[in-house]
Amino acid sequence: MAADTKSRMISAAIGLLQRHGLAAMSFTDVLAESGAARGAIYHHFPGGKQQLALEAARRNAEDVRGHLRELPGRTSRDVVDAFLDSVRPVVQASAGGGGCAIAAVTVDGGAAIADQSSLLTVAAEAFTGWGGELAAKLTDTGMSTSQAADLATLMIVTLEGAHILCRAEGSIAPFDRAAAALLSGLPGPG
Image 1 (cartoon, helix red, strand yellow):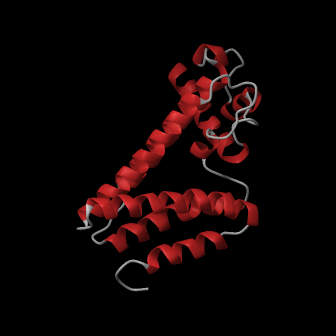
Image 2: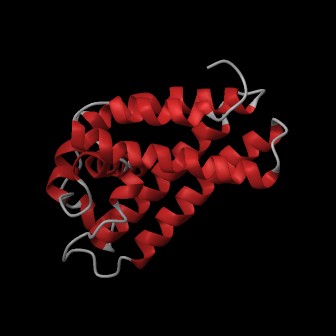
Image 3: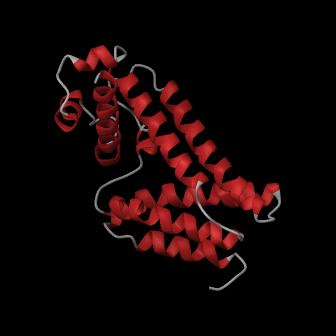
């Protein structure tokens, strides 16, 4: 039961990071969304908000990495298409006010976060891991290691930039333009 409570709190924190960012994520909101009792906070997260944010970012990073690992693709275009299709709903949520939980921990957490360096490390590891999964997929299609790494980085940058631009515009149009540009450089239909 304790593990379930902690898991629910981490899931709630991920959602709050996506919607409100790190500085606005509060234990009160985490408790309300997870249904956990007030005493669960420091039982599961004795390091406070920073520990909760770290654990939420790590879980979200691993979830995304696992999803990327499962992307299909025989050609580089297939991989990019599958990636764009899979992240489109996430970017659509950004157009409605959402965002990326990992990007959220890179922004100032306010007074409650004493040392942001550990959060930045987790974020850097997440983005590197996501890029590595995509690069491996692209390399498997016959792309050189260097080209695959560059394209994988461009895919992650496209996703993260789309979160910001789509949220600002309240539209998925920036993502659609970026996706078309990303695909235009690849062999195949389009």
